[in-house]
Image: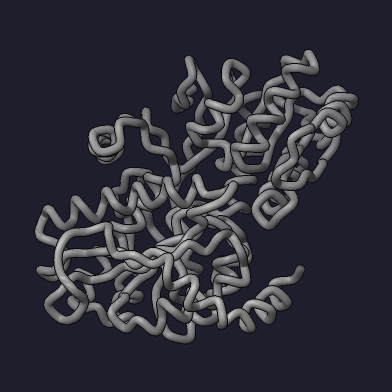
Length: 384
């Protein structure tokens, strides 16, 4: 379904507003009611329930940690931060409904999110109309590039990531022929298209490119088709759930080909699903818990103390997004949305947990990807 069609359908979903509002909460920070002297509410919307809740829940962990640190350090403009949280359920039709809810709350100066690009795209016209800035942490669709002057993201675009992955695999792994498997949605197709273009431009050959549906369990025929042309490697553009199953079924088919995967697989849950078969798989992401930089190490230590586990990329990206939004409010000297958006737009060289962050004139992150390999059940930054 086209974006225009999704948006048109979504605008008829106003009746869902009351039900969605019931999902909201402000439990991520200490202190105060809204208003001039109370807590400043930051909006957060993502997929927080159902089969694809993990990214949204991981992002929320990063957001909650950042807000607790900010509040412990005196808050923003002398006020605590809190969150207004709405579960978008991964449904594009909910995007405009939630956007209107956020816009109508005049106390919200910025919004964090989303899990799915389709949800962000459907709601973006309304956020733009009310001038409410967004600092997104997980949506990667190139369609969001330059789509609004109030939209920014701490994650890299599919176009950038796919091209960088193709360059890395071609130049540093000597792969000449590769089979691509990607999930059939904006994310998977965006990654696959940019990867293919860059890989072929580097002189490589894509032996096959196959789409699969989210929720697929049996990849037997897909894996067989990918392996029959004798590629040098396999590239997976998709989320960890399906990526883990594909890795297992490639190995069950008796293949020991190198396997590479997109940032959708850069989750501890991928390691759980693929088990021993995850060893040696290489992925890209904006963050690794093994990154030795001081900003990363400090974040990892705080996250482990809070949650008793290593943070995912999505937690780190949302943590950074929260700090950037908070700094935007601080630089603006108020919660005026236009002033906050302008301050966020000027972010340049912010030293985050996920690396240095700047925004280009389309709101995209400027920086470098991290390539990682699974070693002894953990993602380890590749340095060679």
